Image (tube, rainbow, N blue to C red):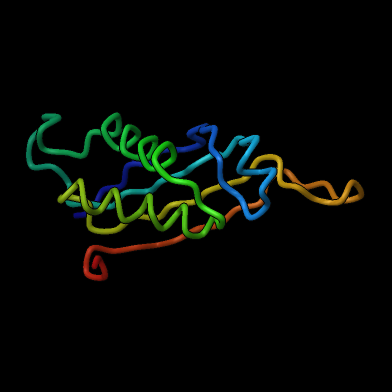
Amino acid sequence: MLVKILIENLQLFGHHGVHEHERARGQFFAVDAELEFDLPSKDELSETVDYVCVIERIRAVNESSSFSLMETFAQAIAEEILRNFSRVQRVRVRVRKLHPPLPSDITVGAIAAEVIHDRSRLY
Protein backbone atom coordinates (compact mmCIF):
# COMPACT_ATOMS: atom_id res chain seq x y z
CA MET A 1 0.00 0.00 0.00
CA LEU A 2 1.27 3.46 -0.88
CA VAL A 3 1.15 6.47 1.39
CA LYS A 4 1.74 10.15 0.61
CA ILE A 5 3.36 12.91 2.58
CA LEU A 6 2.36 16.39 1.44
CA ILE A 7 4.44 19.49 2.08
CA GLU A 8 2.33 22.49 1.18
CA ASN A 9 3.18 26.14 0.72
CA LEU A 10 6.82 26.04 1.86
CA GLN A 11 7.84 29.70 1.59
CA LEU A 12 11.29 30.38 0.17
CA PHE A 13 13.17 33.49 -0.88
CA GLY A 14 15.33 32.81 -3.91
CA HIS A 15 17.24 34.41 -6.74
CA HIS A 16 15.52 32.68 -9.65
CA GLY A 17 13.95 34.01 -12.82
CA VAL A 18 14.51 34.75 -16.48
CA HIS A 19 15.06 38.47 -15.93
CA GLU A 20 18.24 39.82 -14.37
CA HIS A 21 16.27 42.00 -11.93
CA GLU A 22 14.48 38.89 -10.61
CA ARG A 23 17.77 37.16 -9.90
CA ALA A 24 19.45 40.28 -8.50
CA ARG A 25 16.67 41.34 -6.13
CA GLY A 26 15.30 37.91 -5.36
CA GLN A 27 11.67 37.07 -4.77
CA PHE A 28 9.36 34.79 -2.85
CA PHE A 29 8.41 31.34 -4.07
CA ALA A 30 6.15 28.68 -2.61
CA VAL A 31 6.91 24.98 -3.01
CA ASP A 32 4.52 22.06 -2.69
CA ALA A 33 5.86 18.51 -2.67
CA GLU A 34 3.95 15.24 -2.71
CA LEU A 35 6.01 12.15 -1.87
CA GLU A 36 4.71 8.61 -2.48
CA PHE A 37 6.23 5.58 -0.76
CA ASP A 38 5.28 2.25 0.79
CA LEU A 39 3.30 2.40 3.99
CA PRO A 40 5.72 1.97 6.92
CA SER A 41 5.63 -1.46 8.56
CA LYS A 42 6.19 0.06 12.03
CA ASP A 43 4.94 3.19 13.75
CA GLU A 44 8.45 4.67 13.95
CA LEU A 45 10.10 7.69 12.33
CA SER A 46 12.95 5.52 11.07
CA GLU A 47 10.42 3.61 8.93
CA THR A 48 9.10 6.63 7.04
CA VAL A 49 10.29 9.76 5.24
CA ASP A 50 11.15 12.56 7.66
CA TYR A 51 9.49 15.65 6.21
CA VAL A 52 11.80 17.96 8.18
CA CYS A 53 14.76 16.42 6.33
CA VAL A 54 12.91 16.80 3.02
CA ILE A 55 12.32 20.49 3.75
CA GLU A 56 16.02 20.94 4.53
CA ARG A 57 16.93 19.42 1.12
CA ILE A 58 14.42 21.69 -0.68
CA ARG A 59 15.91 24.72 1.07
CA ALA A 60 19.41 23.57 0.10
CA VAL A 61 18.44 23.40 -3.60
CA ASN A 62 16.94 26.89 -3.35
CA GLU A 63 20.03 28.34 -1.68
CA SER A 64 22.71 26.59 -3.73
CA SER A 65 21.58 27.42 -7.26
CA SER A 66 19.91 30.07 -9.36
CA PHE A 67 17.40 28.87 -11.95
CA SER A 68 16.02 30.79 -14.90
CA LEU A 69 12.91 28.62 -15.17
CA MET A 70 10.52 27.41 -12.49
CA GLU A 71 10.37 24.12 -14.40
CA THR A 72 14.07 23.43 -13.90
CA PHE A 73 13.86 24.59 -10.27
CA ALA A 74 11.03 22.08 -9.66
CA GLN A 75 12.95 19.34 -11.49
CA ALA A 76 16.07 19.95 -9.38
CA ILE A 77 13.99 19.65 -6.19
CA ALA A 78 12.37 16.42 -7.40
CA GLU A 79 15.75 14.89 -8.27
CA GLU A 80 17.21 15.96 -4.92
CA ILE A 81 14.36 14.25 -3.07
CA LEU A 82 14.68 11.02 -5.05
CA ARG A 83 18.48 10.95 -4.62
CA ASN A 84 18.35 11.49 -0.86
CA PHE A 85 15.27 9.54 0.21
CA SER A 86 15.41 5.97 -1.07
CA ARG A 87 11.92 5.13 0.21
CA VAL A 88 10.30 7.70 -2.11
CA GLN A 89 9.05 6.07 -5.29
CA ARG A 90 7.38 9.07 -6.89
CA VAL A 91 7.42 12.80 -6.25
CA ARG A 92 5.36 15.69 -7.53
CA VAL A 93 6.81 19.18 -7.04
CA ARG A 94 5.06 22.46 -7.74
CA VAL A 95 6.95 25.76 -7.61
CA ARG A 96 4.88 28.94 -7.49
CA LYS A 97 6.20 32.41 -8.19
CA LEU A 98 4.09 34.52 -5.85
CA HIS A 99 4.68 37.93 -7.43
CA PRO A 100 5.56 37.34 -11.09
CA PRO A 101 6.67 40.27 -13.23
CA LEU A 102 3.55 40.96 -15.30
CA PRO A 103 2.09 44.04 -16.97
CA SER A 104 0.17 46.19 -14.50
CA ASP A 105 -3.19 45.33 -16.07
CA ILE A 106 -2.76 41.60 -15.36
CA THR A 107 -3.39 40.22 -11.88
CA VAL A 108 -2.81 36.61 -10.85
CA GLY A 109 -2.44 34.89 -7.50
CA ALA A 110 0.68 33.05 -8.67
CA ILE A 111 2.29 31.39 -11.65
CA ALA A 112 3.28 27.75 -11.16
CA ALA A 113 5.27 24.96 -12.77
CA GLU A 114 4.86 21.34 -11.74
CA VAL A 115 6.92 18.22 -12.41
CA ILE A 116 6.20 14.59 -11.63
CA HIS A 117 9.22 12.35 -11.33
CA ASP A 118 9.52 8.70 -10.35
CA ARG A 119 12.47 6.63 -9.27
CA SER A 120 12.50 4.56 -12.48
CA ARG A 121 13.40 7.70 -14.46
CA LEU A 122 16.12 8.95 -12.10
CA TYR A 123 19.39 9.37 -13.95
